Each structure stands twice: as C-alpha cells, then as structure tokens.
Length: 206
Image (cartoon, rainbow, N blue to C red; front, side):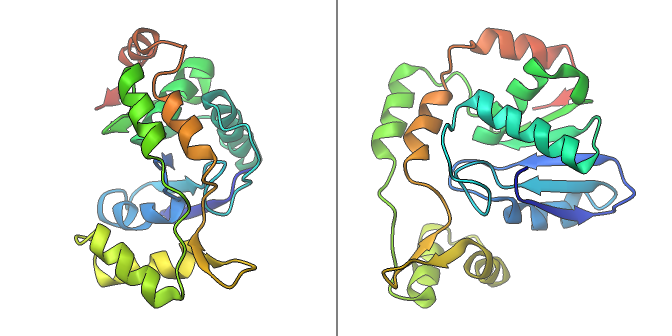
C-alpha cells in the first residue's frame, strides 16, 4: 500500500486525490478543507515520492497497480479520482485499466499527450536533488519558488516533506531518478486518444 493521509468527512463519498510530480499527498489538505468538506479525501503519496516506497518501476501501470492495492487495503470498492498534472494521467490510466473502480473523474491541468519533444525537454530539466544546510534554508528556497504559498503551507511542507540525510543535509522526500521516467510517461504508448475516449465515457470534470 501507498502512504495515505485522510482529510474531510470520514462518512462522505470517497475521493482519491492524486498529486503531481515532486508532490505528495499532504498538499491536498488545503483543497480538501476548502472545496471537499463533504467528502472523505484519501491523499496517497505516489511511488517514488513522499513517504511511500521509492523502489522502481515508476511506470504508469505500476502507479495504477499501487492505487488499486491501496484502495483494496482501505476497503474502497469505487472512488472519484481527483488527479492533478501527472496525477491526472495516473487517474486516466486507472479509469482505463480498472473502470469498475472509478465512479467519476476530476482532472486538474492534466499532463497527457504532451508529445515526444515536450516529454524529452521535461526529462532533461529534471533537477538534481536539491539539498539544504537547514530547514530555514529550505523554507526560503521554497518561498522564492512558490511565492503564493501561505506561511502555514510552508510550515506544513517543512514539517512533512523535508528529511535529513546521512550527510546532515536536508532534502525533499522524492526519488530524483523517478522524474525522467515520469516525464516520459506523459507521452505513454497507451495513447492519448484511448485515454480521452475512456474519460468521455464517464462523468468527469476537466
């Protein structure tokens, strides 16, 4: 099973919120409180990120298998996937390979069908793992990159997504080797056309 956080109303309809690259489930806390208070929001960390296993492979099919195993472990027969960016691509593949597990879809800025050149550029830009002297340095770097994040959000990132390595340096919780693979998944051989047709067969919000 993936590492999962739960937000919202535990008696509400289940939503599985799937994050994007370099993300983790904890970032769904704010959106769940603001927009999904009547739902039970399960926010997993995808493989290679956060507190879930970092072991390869990181292919779309593996992410789908991880989600299904996690849903089984949580006793969730059918859910509403809410996918952001790469998480939307994972959600579409879940609907394609396990349609009986998906009730309806919400896709936020979905990273699908970007084309081979765009996928290659994304892979080339995948950064080396940034490291920091201390949490304060990490916080300042994050605030500079994402100025719209409120102070409370920065505090959550530092508390939940930063870890100290054996060398004493601090790093975000993701496996850097997974990012080029994930970028290539955006133009996966499964084909955008087949995914979109599947999406259109089910209730959804894009």
